[in-house]
Image (cartoon, rainbow, N blue to C red; front, side, top):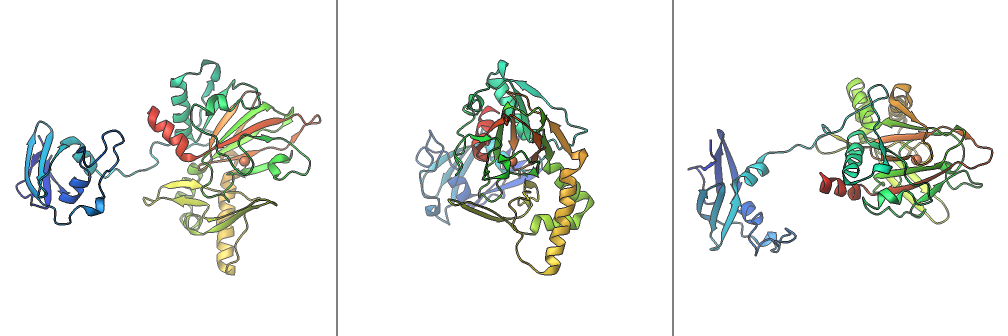
Length: 362
Ligand SMILES: [Fe+2]
């Protein structure tokens, strides 16, 4: 059945009949979405007029439908052309969900190891798709140089500059400014929840690993959140609603953020998880609220650290992990390194930068 203009259309509302449905389009919306050259810039697609200036009582004077196109004449004596299928697509409420994500635990995940020696544009696309689907990607044979990360990251976008600089050392040092810079075990966490916005992705590149220990752990926060939602509804509600607090402070910096451990979008999809024991500063609250939150956090923690949910990877020189910091909890086992030569490099990237590249390649 071909789309047609319904007889019940009025001067304010165009109604398209299609597959037993009647889909209304308001005159002002149609005008604002017009692609006429004096309305929208042909090169950038950006609006040239002030949308608020479109008259409220703008009327549709005439309509004509031919060959997949609709021609509309408005009461300001202008004529506009629309693609019928584009209009119909716009009317379908596309509910964004996590269905394109593959939730995993250590029993059902199969790791793809990309070999950077064979790197090309197709591999870049597959790496980014893997990051988006599983929350991380594993790339081998990244050049073992100080800024080897950039041999791949430069093709995606700029590394985020923070108060610690751009690509930074991860190694054990005296008087560490952060526990990352020690040889101690690092419990599973997400990075820097005290920043707003928190950096979206972590590039973790191994230059040299320790002989003993130093394995990385990864756990899928979206899978854990889903499990908690199904098993412990009350706990899930606390973790999504209770605002805790994170702070990082040194002599030059004071970063603070108030947020929940599980964040949802308007459609109740999980869009971010957080856990960072080292920098959480539990806000003062009633005894009851504090108890409830601490109990919920404990349940979350049990899942974050459970063997079933954790994937253990010992990176070799040249191995790089790209980790979605809004989804994956990562940690590091303590290590013994008598010569203190374990050396990793780490860079961050903003969420929009990587997603932009993925959108372009898809
Ligand atoms: Fe970290």
